[in-house]
Length: 189
Image (cartoon, rainbow, N blue to C red; front, side, top):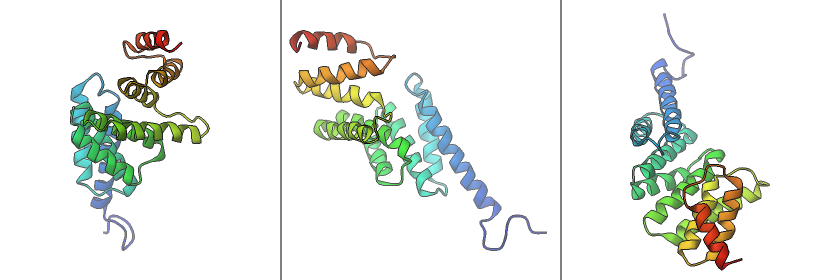
């Protein structure tokens, strides 16, 4: 009795390992949504991505695993490791819907590492990509993050414009952003 497929097809064990690795990547990406409020979720997302990366993966799923690992590292305060994984994910075949999020997260890692201009370039690239798609959604956080960088760099008028754009688009707002925009509005009417 032969179990599996035709001669030359992957064995049942190989296929099961591949499907397990894909499930780990999906679970890892899913856990990232909880990571803002639950650091344990970021640790688990990182562990699942690491485990998946030791298994057979197609190039697209591998890049998604790198995205998950880098984003989890960002939540865990490991900017250098996040930068490495996110850069690798963007250089690979990352699913197009994850690219703006990966660029935003890479920008945060770069900013935390002190590379403010490189961070601003990544955030601007997210905004340009969004505009080239006819306004298709990208992470509003990229607009907010660019506004914060511009504000810190003494470019208040530009920061105000970005904060206003963010505040119009987002219902859930980080504390203090509206207040900072109002303060800038007094200086740049």
